[in-house]
Image (tube, rainbow, N blue to C red; front, side):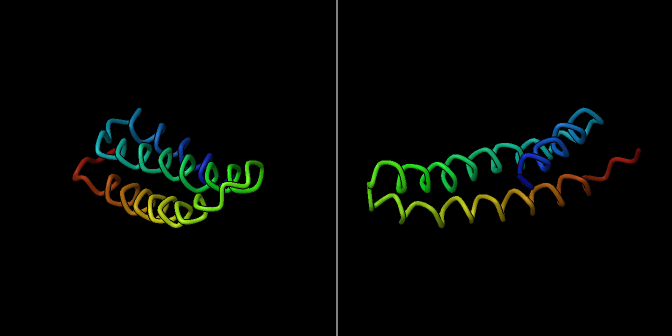
Length: 78
């Protein structure tokens, strides 16, 4: 849920001319696919090795938050 809001924040920043924040959007998307997707596959499909993929999604989420913060400090003023 929070990462969907973060994607809206990324879109808002990119719209305002902070193009470096777009990397955060890609990281959030990767995090959603890896973290949530692996949990869905693990639960619904019973593919146990997908549990090892879940932490990679968490790392992508953390990297997305860092990229969002750094994308805002790219030297541009509003």
